[in-house]
Length: 315
Image (cartoon, rainbow, N blue to C red; front, side):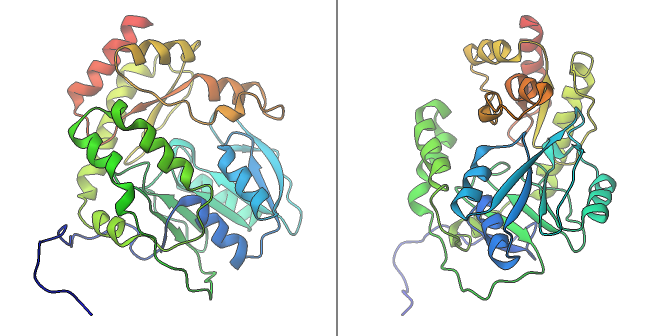
């Protein structure tokens, strides 16, 4: 029975939500787990240059893995697929253009595209594509999957009200004070079953001005590009609604530590690749020395110029 009266809860937001037509689940890795079931995937070819959470998911579901390399433009190289094997393509920093992804799909057919770092890129038609919300917005969970392979199973709905403290705390205080809670929430998804997106996260995603976010992220990426491309070992295009600006320099790991002293926190993505014996020299070098500089909607052009200035002080 519905309750009436009493204190007022969080408002219900009604703005249009991006990816509304996709399957809404609790996290990106469970979008892949969903496809393991509906597509009956038993073999998956993955890039060496990738987070080990996907590798662990494959082991959990008994999916046989093989690997391929990417070049310094993040494009897949030397791929050979068996008839019963699927290809997993990571759209790193949104750098793979739609035409490139289309060629991959046409050539290999059984393709899954990971747009976790390209939230504003539209999915290719008839191509399994996944998106992750937490990398772009202040929400505790959430992911979207485009597929025409629909499960007959009815999944329960996630609840995330107990996982909001680090987000609310970060809004009013410093990130360092709540980092451990953020990290715990991130690691929790390794053991989470497939669930529908939580009611709370779904509501928050209806309160976002997506055009503003897209424009701000694009402008911030352009600001970095205009001043840092000269030193960047990567040749980059400007994606719409960028995830981050990947700055690749010699001794990037030392620059990361120097920036941390100035309270500019740059994550080390995929440290597992550094010690991976199968990764090639570029992949190991990139994993250790790419600095994904923040370009999200929290920051103005003045903020980005400050970060650039601090980089210049060190380099």
